[in-house]
Length: 151
Image (cartoon, rainbow, N blue to C red):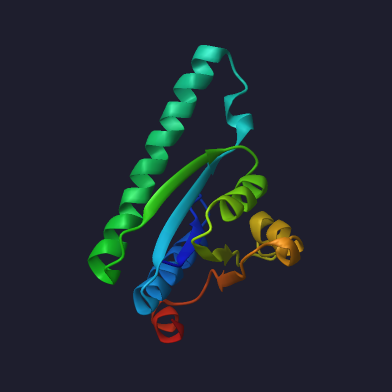
C-alpha cells in the first residue's frame, strides 16, 4: 500500500498537510504515516532530566497524534500510524523515507508568513532531486473547502 508521509510538529501549516494527506489517502486507497522528530538539543541536560524530558516529549507527541488520528479515522476512514524518531528533523525525515519502501509521497505544509515556507520545506526541497519519492507542498492558508476540492 502506498503511504503518504506527513510530519507532525507544532507549526500551523502542519494541519493542512495532515488534512491533505488523509484526504488523498482516503480517495486513493492509501495510508498515512505520521512522523514526529524529537530534536537532540531538547535533552542537553543532566542524564536523569534529559530522560524525563524525552518521555514528556513522547507523551505530547502521542496526545497530538491522537487528535489527528481520530479525525482521520472518523472523517476519512484512514487509520494512520505514528513513527517517532530522534535527531535532526531533515535527516530523520529523509531516513524515514529511505527506510520505509511503502512511502510514496512526502507531504509538507508551507508556512504563510513573509519569512518563507518554513525550514523543513526549504531544506527538503533542496534535497528533492535525491529523494526516492515526490514531495507535495500544501499551502498553509488553503481553506478546508479548497483542500477537499483538490484532493
